[in-house]
Image 1 (cartoon, one colour):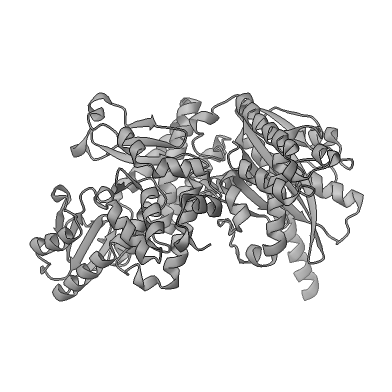
Image 2 (image 1 turned 60 degrees about the vertical axis):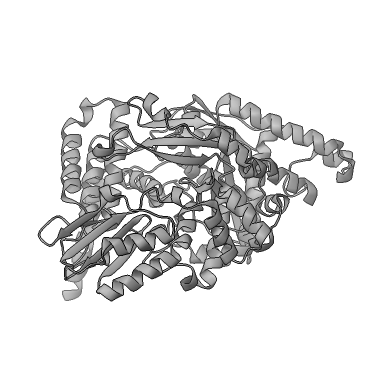
Length: 640
């Protein structure tokens, strides 16, 4: 996509497949003026650390209390664009990054480390190792200091024409300034700081000091106490309408605690996690181990997530130490027969009693290989189910009455089948799909031959069905689960139920065959159809290039609904592909590690009985001794 010539909201809406009403709403500065958050609101917030203010179906403001005790009752204002409209900013960020990557050095300096691929707090801290003197400065109200005119100039630099730059600068700002919360804001801020960074680099070279910037945190280090004067720095910042937050200016030297972006640089070899955090993790692990069973379930769930988050942070900085913490954490969970939920916090709208799972299947041949794939679409609550169904029926009625669609009566009856719908119908359905509220899970398996026999097909189907629902039902273990597989003459619903019942520790569920008239079954059908078209084109390249548990690299059609796809599993290669952050996905892997002490996941679903094969520690020990004894006997016989 070329964003540089999208000079109307209609063109942006069409190219990004986003609601025109949403774009008009965001671009309208009158709504921003009327809905701007009153500064006096801080005084009425009491002790609440977070406040959500909903302005519309599109936007809300989140006020988060700052953690620093010196700035108690001060709040950070974050703009939240609600799903699915937030995808627009993610896609726009992708397009901006594509332009930047064509000539990277013209847009981003080496001194920038915040919100940049392959750079982070660790890479920032590494630049200041083995330095005696350290100075740190903070830019006051960094994002709010970048105005709409500066954002406009950035889009001009990216190659956009005047009209396009004006549109995008309106869409990427709020109340005339850059705002935290939008996916595009950190990258735009880095682009804005390009000239600033160059000036500070030149000044640093003059004084022979090292300079880096992580978002609004500027760090200077040197082996000599010879730094740029604060007056010089202020003069440069004022050129860009920026100011220091003097309350956060810090000057330290060797022998004192030296921290850069939260990491200790006292060790000359590598940055380290602060001691206070390590002590806190050790303390938490000790208390969990000693008092695990005494705590209430809700409290322990929250505490486990908190501790595990700290452990993952440690792994990213000090890998070996983090792994030790993680192993201790796993032992505590295993000892107490406990698993973390396969998500972190459920959002408030998902705290419901019922979850409805609709299942569809497809098979596809790629390069003389036969694949079977399942898609499961999960819908939360009866209310959401009713709303989704009403939207689909409304579209179906509209398409049936639309003469331009040219549908026969037979085609009208078969509407909303991906393989049979015409291009116009597919386009209308895909536009609606993004506004529906659901989550999707996909699993696929490679057949042993290009033409699968009925028994082989059934075996493969049962395997992937049991595997995906083992994950899904454990995730939704607090809810009443209702499963609706599509009608399939080769598959028995009673056998599906029997297989799931044989799997230990799954929550209660109800399963019944979905009817052909159930319009909600068209959702997994379309999700699977879009995914199938994608892998037909890209399986040979994308799947090979993906590393284990990395984010999917998708085409445009899949990208439009990808925020709704929670997990994609390649059953044959035992690989998970996920849109979640590494921390969330690692939570899933952690559960498998805990369960792996009891379950043999390589033979998770038995070929004949399709149940989990249990292997006790004792049985594993006996098998290990037997193999070693057999090898020893072989050596003895050969020596004779």
